Amino acid sequence: MKRNTTEIRIIKIGFLHFAVSGRQISEILRFDKDDAESAKKRKKEDVISGSDFFGMPAKGPEKWVVSFSSEVFSSKISVDEVSEIIETIPVRSVENRIVSEIVFSAAGDIPVINMLPLFEEYSNTAERRNAIFKAIAEVRKPISRDIEAVSEHSVKQKKVRALKISRRSRRYNQLHKFLGSVKTKVALFLTLLVLASMFGIIVFESKVNTAFKSLWDTFWYSIVTITTVGYGDKYPMTVGGRIVGLLLMGMGVIVMAAVTGQIASFLVDQQMRRREGLLKLKSLQNHFIICGWRRELDRVIEGILSVNPEYNVSDIVLINNVGHEAMLPVLNNPSFEGINYINGDFIEEETLRRANIHKASRIMIIADFSQNYSQQEVDSRTVMAVLTIESLTKHVYVAAELLDDKFEKYLKLANCDEIILSREYSKMILANASSASGVSHVLHELLSPQHGQGLESRDIPEWLTDQPFGKLSDYYNAAYGAVCIGLLENTGNFYSRKKEALSEAQMTPDISKLVENLKTVKQLIPNRPLLNPGREYLVRKNSKAIVIELSKPKA
Image 1 (cartoon, rainbow, N blue to C red):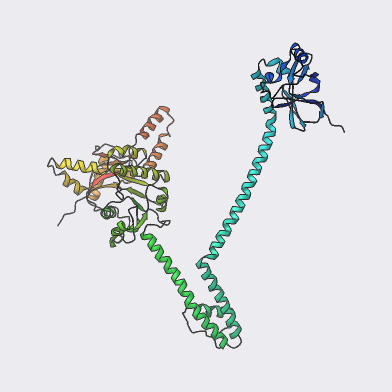
Image 2: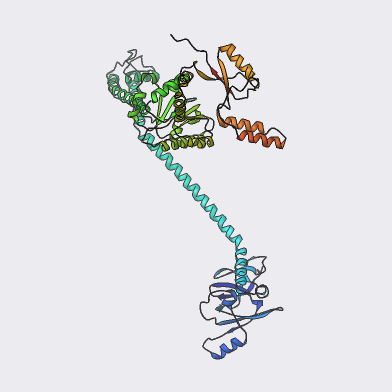
């Protein structure tokens, strides 16, 4: 069966190669630039320069003139080169007004140009050049996509091969590391020693010694001898069996010394790493993390343990980078035996992860004086620590100490649950003391760190939620002899409080009410104190009672 062929001529103008159907060309003439008569004839024939027509830079004199003609138009263009008529097989037919098909030639796949639209529809060089390049690009898109698909598949195959090689290499390295470790060598030697002794005893003793009737008996004897226990219930009677026993005893002393040394080394290393703050606290849960350091850190810890009796010393985790020597007074304090220490910068994620921050219940960031930081640097580190903690977990209660109140707004934006302005509080106490009012003594008694004394915030029974404050006040007075002086609203983790409030605000179908509720949520303040709100004030959800405990008479 004869395949369809196309008769074309390949034309070259500057750097542009394209094909034209033989039916579009009526005449081809050659001109000599040095022949005056040829130049005159070319000018008379009104020949258009091909480089001017398509806007291509000319590589040299255009020696050929190609006459294009049809029922509609007739024009002549000078070109660099034009081939003889070539019969070629179309690679692909396309639906395009300028490029009719793609044909295969010795120069590769070449587009076949339809000259009619170029003459009729485009009046200037730039339009013709853009049109022909756009048409060629459009018909080559499917080919480009195929090449890209093949290339993408090739890249995927290379990635798969690289991944397989990487996995094999990793497994080989793990195996090599396992077999090369001292522990593995000791275990293999011990296993071979036990098997060899079992074989020796069964060979020498099985026929003359009734104590070794099975492999289990020889295994029992080998283990007892190697561990230097020596029950004496089984013993060899032949010379060969006794020689095996002597070898077991000697090797047993060496093996047990090695094993004991490994265990002791591991325990000592763990203890050293714990004291130097290099361990990862993977198993710790519901713990209290203290970030930062100051000289009176031991007194801070004592106060925290006194006010929070639900925490043990082993539940406290200290994070700072002051160094092991500066931490010795705390770590060697008998009262803090079992306390956990992480040596590192608490603004770094890796350090916080080592403290198992996701499982912690509370975090307190105190002003950090571990290094020679300025006041501004201390507060900046506090803000950075809160931001880092909030990026790692949003469900841990965070309290942070600031020296300068101008950083307070940044902690509020980070949803810090509680902000302690320690120097501002000191200024207030000094100012009140200047009036000889005795307020400083009152505050000292109220803020006493002894649990069950002074000022405290107490959980409110669920049945008193949405009840008048007067009823709550009467309840605490009657049940505990305590005086309820106010409420602490929006307590607990502020992220959780905000999430709950947002969920409740969106439950109304009224749009105006919804907008009002959302504004209320936006204005929520964590741990908002409300002193003496009045007996008719309704107690809200997630509130605590601020009470003054019944005083204990002093001796």
